[in-house]
Image 1 (cartoon, rainbow, N blue to C red):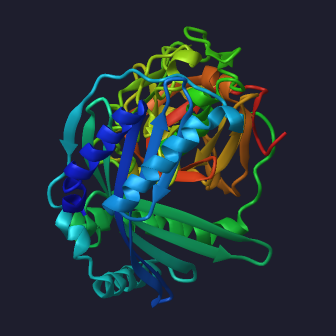
Image 2 (cartoon, rainbow, N blue to C red):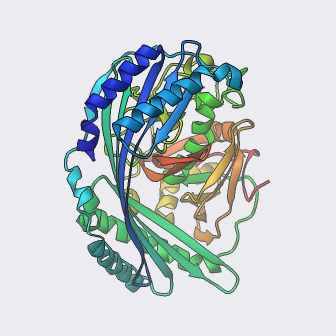
Image 3 (cartoon, rainbow, N blue to C red):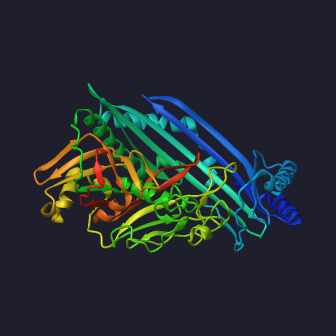
Length: 495
């Protein structure tokens, strides 16, 4: 698939010449993606497949700022030439169509290749061997924690792009991703609870890598025990409480509450903007708290260049409690009053790129120590951290929200609502498990309430980001744990 994209030199040059002759700017996006996946439940293979997608998208911009896009599910030269002609005609007819006009970008041309080694392994995935290995792992987990339902899923994806622009830009990058997921389900007389865990690696041999499979088995066993115990757990009281959350829930808060509100194409309705302009330097949180988004090589959401061929840069959304950067593309940066950060991503060549996050994190100045690995921490160890830091002197009882199970935010009002996997009540006397509940409130008040962080950064909480019908990989995190003082606008159990 990389060779297929590398062989497009002549066609790309021809399309660029045609765009110059027509007096339009061109962005040409070619993509090749291969995905192998398998699902095992109860020792049986429920599904397995290998799919491939190849094609290209054409975007042109006229001198007057009109933009038009088109795409095809192949890379054949003659249809590509015809598609370019049609897209140019649509852009030229935009006054009669009543289309909104944007600016014509002026960018520095760049040429680069970002292709990790060893990608041929993605084309040699043996799904029969994968399914046997998934069944082995499922049997091991079930033997350790009997009485729960288990489902294991494997997905290996190699996503490669080549982006060429009429200003001479030509970048090619490949993004390898492999995810192993387990979902455990426990049932009681009155309720049913599912708990999922995932492990990521950039190599399709993930299933046979000792370190990763050991981590997966430990995490899956913990999830299975939690799923087994939750049906019998009592609910947590509703209200505002001192909270401690783990890095996965912190990633959800950073991504949903601040990341989407920082996307410059949404500034006309974002709580972080006024009259379409970012409120740069406005205070939005405690002065020891920052929120950062950046691509990390080898990460689940790594993308070195935007879908417009712009180098993706580190964006400090919040620095020391104040707004600094937005997530922008060439069309939204100047109108939104932010610098260009190359944040545009697209699910496929069919889609229009949009400013999106990659790896987003909450970072706190001077975190308190949390020795060892995150996997070594259960609720008892978290309680010990609070005890050692003297936090029970400040508040005698804390609610520990563990894990992230989805959520949403209203970027216009800043209100969020998330679901955790479990809640633990922590005090000097011990730990008690409660059923999960909604974690909701105002994102600005939540960021202001962050008091302490424990441990180093952990940035591998993975998921997918949905926006306007598109889904792209996301990741991020925080320190192992974040502690929040109670605030009436941040609650457990809804409003």
